[in-house]
Image (cartoon, rainbow, N blue to C red; front, side):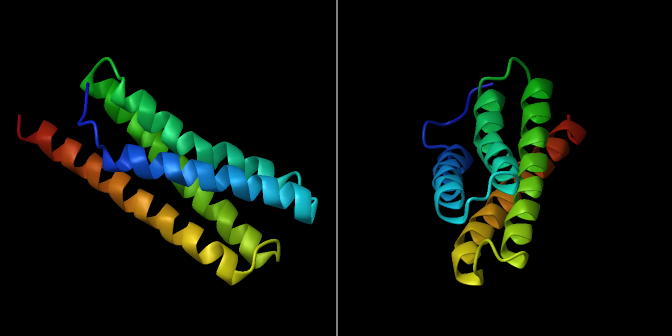
Length: 123
């Protein structure tokens, strides 16, 4: 299944992954935090990786499955960001923008999933 060149979820999930990688580098270098940050970088970069796989999916079912994984990874990332804030590794100021971006990705991914389900019902 192919999508438009300027795909919003593709662009936003990639930009978010770049921010997560930079955050990981900061956490390791400045905070010497290696365990939680590794979880964060795995889930945060997986969102965009699964969006890419969905775009290259071989079928509508494949597209939906990868997008569903991407949504779950975004939920997990949201959890790790909140945990890092609440445990003092990130200040509310540092985490605010990332949490907003993650929430936006969740809304976009959720909307795509709902649209796909409605399309299937209407067939």
